[in-house]
Image 1 (cartoon, rainbow, N blue to C red):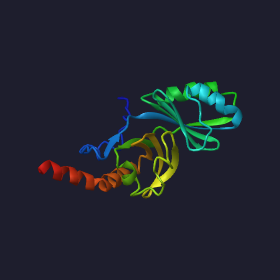
Image 2 (image 1 turned 180 degrees about the horizontal axis):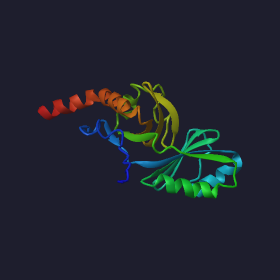
Image 3 (image 1 turned 135 degrees about the vertical axis):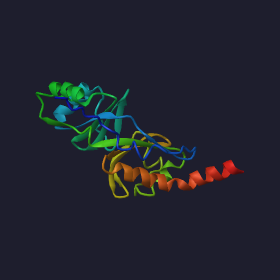
Image 4 (image 1 turned 180 degrees about the vertical axis):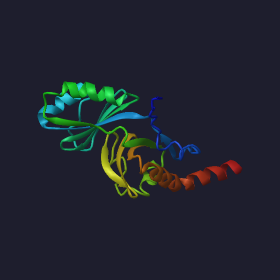
Length: 198
């Protein structure tokens, strides 16, 4: 009997295929990543960071990064651990083994969401078509992250550079979020097309 093989397909594979780049605003699919949610008491936070290889931030709405790994603060006792290009089951086993003596929980949520990037000088403007937050650099600086909404979708939003934001979105909402942002940036694509015709 032939063995079944499960192949994970990125939820943006279809809608992003014909995406057009613009110097004002661009959308991109981010690489697949292992994603774990860690929840624990204060005594386990240091051990979790040591096991993951990234210190877990304890400042509200911040993320920490080392190489391709990031730890996002989601709440007083909750963090999202993200490792780009890593095997979720191997990462989970390694961290779980090192936390075996601690009172905490670790859940693999790698298949729950995919990630995308919005980049460009008008990224704040486009995001605010569906996100109610104040996204100026003064209010939402580099290194910040938060749970919020975009249109009707819950997201985890982070600012990685001055003009770059990353969005972690549940897979069932991602095509909707992509199309919402793509529609919001159309005015800049039309301007770009008009300039190319002159």
